[in-house]
Length: 427
Image (cartoon, rainbow, N blue to C red; front, side, top):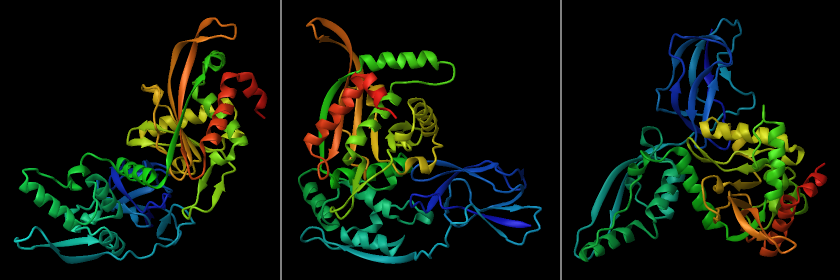
């Protein structure tokens, strides 16, 4: 029986994905759970397996095309005697509502300088009513934007990225007027078009750009910087490494993450999020600690779920799996969602301090600087070599004040500088 495989809901509000590579061709015989295609979403590369064995009869999209969630991805001839002709990846997938896409001819009258004639721009724009409404709010001419959707459809993300990249302030009429006035003074001003950036930016990079702009424009950031003497915890890490050298990758990061979770028990405000209305705070029970990874498709932040329930070794195992997945671009969307606080290890590349941008809707993020061997005075007043790591916190000042951040950091610092205290606190 011939069945259509329906592209499942990948999660995180993703409604479409790009076909990166077909692993099979029409006429091929496949096995159950065999990977059929690699697709790229706004966040990651995802492998799509088949739920049945059989023969591929049709691939509904070419490589590079955009596939819609809940639409047929491929067709397969099976030997089943069942009557259903549609394969759903999950029973919980709901029937999608119709998308109202209209192709309109828009006459945009743009006023230039006095004495000049008005220029009429007549373009056919393929987009949705919601996108047109967004364009009207910013007085944008949609013909200036190249859509990244199927058949050149302009998406909401295209408009947002255009505003970000062009530094758009005010209306398009003001932009054209500014350009004309500047040209009179011998200055040339250009408004970037989406088309010039599509070739260079991946979907993940576009999404990251939009999220970072949203974060810095909607969250009042403040930064707190301190240094931590990690000499003792470095020695503990070496002891762990020698014991588990054969089958575990033990870095300093699992100790930092686990001690961070211990600290969150006393300061749950840093493991929360502020509602959009600005009046309610949600405190998260689980400590889903994210780790920023410079991945194949761009910056990704997978998170280790429920760190409060894990041992240091278990944290190390999860960290290794997520880091490898993120670097290869095959991280699961579920691993990218649900984070409650983030750690960015810039010191692995270089640098001792930073002003990290909060991973919205979280309320705090810490950037770890590189560990340096520096002279410090001992209790007896003698100079000795110590391992010093700087940490840079960014907090949401609507939720966290500087005193709370300082007290939180002091407790975390105490665990790292006195590992026996940390181990004694662990359940």
